Image 1: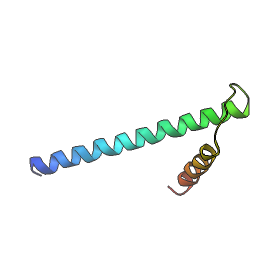
Image 2: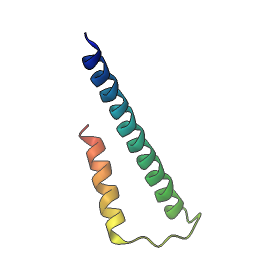
Image 3: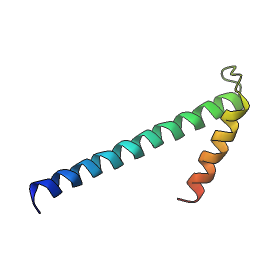
Length: 64
């Protein structure tokens, strides 16, 4: 493996870690906000597209 292939493999690995980390942060924050809303810990007024996005996110998790 030459240096160019090694660099591309490292960049691909960094990109995967970044995408999975960002996805994990979004999922955790969505779940925490959802339970805060359900148990009325904080009063949040959410637009309808948030619920659509949350349902799409959970549906996407089922098919991974």
